[in-house]
Amino acid sequence: MTDPGPLLAIDDLHASVDGEPILRGVNLTARRGEIHAIMGPNGSGKSTLAKVLMGHPGYEVTSGTVSFMGEDITDADSPTRANMGMFLAFQYPEEIPGVSVVNFLRTALSNRTGVDYTVLELRLRVMDAMESLGMDASFADRYVNQGFSGGERKRNEVLQMAVLEPELAIMDETDSGLDIDALRVVAEGVNRLAGPERGFVVITHYQRLLDYVTPDHVHVLVDGRIVRSGGAELARQLEEEGYEAFRAVPAP
Image 1 (cartoon, rainbow, N blue to C red):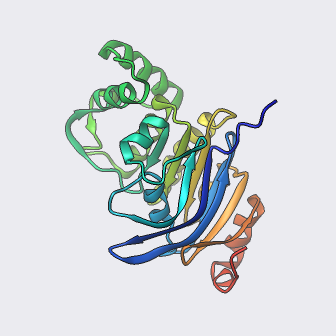
Image 2: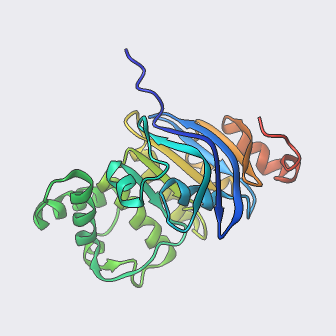
């Protein structure tokens, strides 16, 4: 069988915000079927990496490349990346007043697939996804994130992933601020969606999400560089030893 190559390839990526360097040479390769966890202390560049991967216009790539499914997307805008099959679950999802969850998903899915779904077709698809995620059906008619609790906002992000079926899902500290029940919902959603057809990049500060989602690869990001990579045992080592021991580690 022909090797399809990596799903995501980050090569010596440098990026800055308002002229201040944040990422200082990130290298990472992810294939379909893999879950990559990126862990690091506050200020290490984790959220910057997530936003750069999705083409946020406020972040400047100063050198290096990002490739997705074999195509260089370093200069591609966010809508292009989303339509190609990249998805970002935000740390703090925004409210969209006046737009229902089902209509938001209808527009997003139509842009993603090029198919003009009817409201009924999309509603049936959303209901199936919500049932599989154990979500109340009334959720679909609420305005996107308006009046949602923190846990509901994160559940909504998992619902979006389930409906849009991205090739690559990037989760930017989705576990932030969740109670244990909401954390389990997010983790179960990731585990249901994980499989040989897509990849995950899970960005987190703590081990606790990884108690429910087992990563294939763990990367330690410190001062804008990945200083150590390993398996799930690396996350446990971080939990025991903290990040300080990794600050002086030279990049591999």
